[in-house]
Length: 502
Image (cartoon, rainbow, N blue to C red; front, top):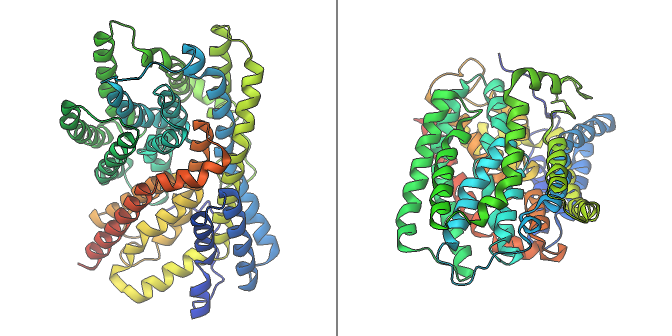
């Protein structure tokens, strides 16, 4: 049995031509404002306002919209609390505080290797253990040590989100598997294979960004990078099959990271600054894994649960990463006897307000857009026009949901209810390669789209120490990423449509 849809999805819009033209307007408006260099907060609120007007015009009552807004706010809070705590953690336990500033990077031949490891291995590993964008906190901290400009740091820290389907111990994959009745082991493995082009595109972006800063890979790095990425994808797929998605990314990335750090430590005579800088984040990762994988402890911490909506995930304050981010950050700072901890915490909290507000705005837009019935209307119209090829709509819709919400769980909640209405994907046909492939495409598409979501960009800008006015420049610098994602979504849509029609 497929579970209920946690994200309220309205169906009141009638499939008329004006309704079809109005349905995507809130999202298009938000994206247009971002392209015009307006802030994420302004774009999200404007899109949400238009979504309200369209929903009211289509017959949705005010009470339903208020309920949708409250639901969206609750979904956003689980991410916002981590943004607030994550930036405080970064401020009080940052590597710069531990090392007294940036390391000397002039003419350092290993600089590219450290950047690659931070973006492509350590960041995704941290995100897999913690979720909610914490991987970007770790990556940005390591990149600041390399003396990169804030805009480059912000763009490169987005690569920490490469394995979002396995973020927070694969909660998004597990929720999607439960909603659509798939074996999580098979779903995780299929999603891992679909993630290969994402990693390849990320490598191109990494090379472009480092080259713009005058940093180029050595000959052996050019050869090793593609091989390491291929090995990581194969290990990820195998780990999903053998041990399940919850710890698959940790297992797949743990070995390459350990080998890299060991070799680096030997080459530096035990003086590599990255290992020192990683200490707070290793402690955080171990703490979070303990609170999730040790059953008696995890059960005890999950006990106090706040759940205002029965069909939405609850918030367990003692189990949520936000508490442990704060506890670990202050614990590390106190253990190191750092000065000015309260001032640093205040600075981190102030930096977090802008990305937190942007997150609320865009999740509100997503919730109100869904409540007005727009995604259901678009899916229905597409199914009527394309027939058996209708599953091609799944990757683009998942990409839009990921862009709006920055959360794989929210993607599953928004899109899963629509899948059952598509030909060949109804509730009675959840087995076989087509349903599994379409669901894996949903996970992969939604996951990669979260990388360029406005809330992720705003958080990356705050972590990099960029000014609010730099947000548009960061979006421009990150242009290859959304272009690559759009091409991947188009390819996934074409493949899904061809497979369904065959």
